[in-house]
Structures are given as C-alpha cells and as structure tokens.
Image (cartoon, rainbow, N blue to C red; front, top):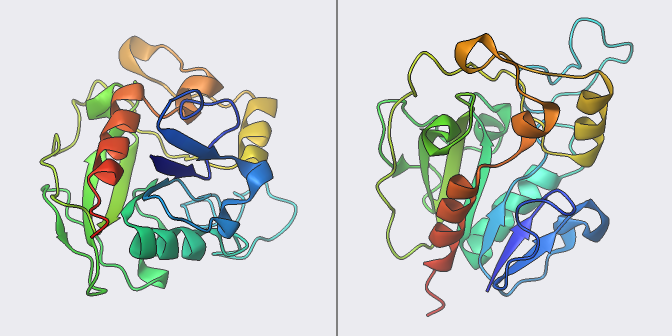
Length: 211
C-alpha cells in the first residue's frame, strides 16, 4: 500500500487497490503514515507565475502554500517515496534541495537524505513536454528513467496546476497549450498525470524498504 498525497479528487490515483488517495478535502498535511508516499504538493506559489501573472489583481507571496510543500517533503523523508514538482520550482532551493541536471540521472539532493532528478512527462505519454523535478528518499533502488527532453514537436507547458483552486481557475479561463501539429490541449489534458508516469511514481514509492 502507498499513499498518494495532494491529488485531485476522483483523479488518476483513485480506484486503485493499493493506493490510499489524499485529495484536498483530506488535507495531506495531516498524513500520519505509515505507508510510503507519492506526493504532488501544490505548485502555484512556487512556479514561474507564483505572483499570479501580469494581470493579477492581488500580489501573491512566493512560497505561500500553507506549508504543503514542506509537509510533503517531510512525509517523503520520514515514510519514503517520491515528490513531484514542476521544473524550475522555487520550492527546491527554498528547502535546500539542489537543482537536478537536464542531462539526466539521479543526483544527491544536497540534504544528506534524498536524491533528485529531472524528467519530462512528455516522455511518458503527456502531449506537452511538462518538465518535472523529482525528489526521492528511502527507496530500495533509483530507477533509470527516460532521460532528456522530448522531441521539439511536443509543446512547452509553462503552467503547472496541482491544486483544486488552481485547476478551477484554469478551467474557468479555458487554459490550453499548443501541442502536436498545432492542436490545443484541453484543460484536463494539461493538468492530468499520464498513467505511465503515475505508475512509475507508484513503483518508486512501492520499492521503499520498511526495515
């Protein structure tokens, strides 16, 4: 059994026999263990548009996520597993984690505990590149992933939405990115974790040793 933290209600982590999903209503900051975790903490206050963008009426505070990233990081360190955040997330530096290289491979995270890497969800079925950073701890072995950036034919996905509030805001304005052949992705496609990538993250968490 593993726990999936900060996931969308009714999303890709729901309905799996060996996954305990924690959506916004359950408040994953309160996760007590004991299972290893896959964590998708909210990213809107840590990404390129943490300030809300040029049209924002309210000035945001970088890192103002209610402690979600810190709690997710602590859960991975204590119970083992893997944390996912968008590429260029300010949360990594703010929590003392090193920037992983796009050349590929796992490198020490700089905290004396975990490992980090850079991977593109576009290599695992997402129609946009969706550049992503991972942090893993206490896993039995670090898997070799599909390293490097996807083909140029895939779109660059500048926005990462990982909270219910941000998803709702994105859907309200009809957010979409250009993908293969000039077509547009739906909001749901932009926000979704591809099943092969989800399964990869689950497998990393499932490899955590309890000894």
